Length: 287
Image (cartoon, rainbow, N blue to C red):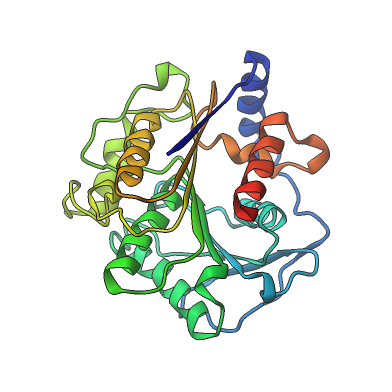
C-alpha cells in the first residue's frame, strides 16, 4: 500500500471549506468545451449523461462516474461539472450514472445500476482495461461494491477505481473528524439505515470491507485528514492491500469530507488542493 500525506496550510484548508460552501449558493458554470452528446447509445437501461472535455474518442476508453449524495440525493448540474473535470484528468469520455436513489430504491438497486452500465460498455466493445470507475462518498462506496459483484460473477475487471471518501463499513462507528469535518458523524447511521433498508451492515458487497478484496484492480483512495471516514478508508486500504490489491491512499491533511469539490470551479479559480487532486489523478491513470 502506498500512503501519501498531502499537506496544506490552515489558510488553504479554510479556503477549501469556503469554496465548498459556495457550490450551492454560487454554482459554477460548465466549461464551454464540455460535450454533452451521447457517445454510446446503450448504457444498460440506466440513465445518465455523457460528458467529454473537448473531442475525446472511445479509443481512450471510458470513465464511469458515480456521484455522492448519501445514496439519496442527486445534483445533475454539479455532477456534470465533476464529470467534465474527471474527463480532463483521465483523458477519456465520462458517463455520469444516474443511479436509482434510496429510500425509494434501497440496496442493492444502485449497485445493480453501476454493474449494468459497466457490462453494457463491455458488450459494445469497450475493453475492460480501458474502463475506469470514479466516484465520491456514496458513489465511492458503490463502485467498490460493484467491483466485488463483478469479481464474484467472473466479469473482467476495469483498469482501476478511484473512490474519494467512501463508506466501506456500515457496521463501524464513524470517527469524529476532530470536529472539523463538513458532515456530522451523527447522520452516518441514518444514511446507512435508509440505504440498507434491513440488509446487514456487516456483509459485502454493501459494506465492501467484508468482501474478498483479492484480485481487484488498482484502487486510488483520496481522503481528507479531518473527515469522519478517515479511519474507515484507512482500514479498507490496509485490508485490500493485505489481500494483494494495489492501493494508493492519498491523505489530504486538514481537509473535510468531499474536499475535492473544490475542482468544480473554473480552472482559473482552482485552489492548490484542487490542482493537486486532478494532477495526482491524471498521474495515477497514466501509471
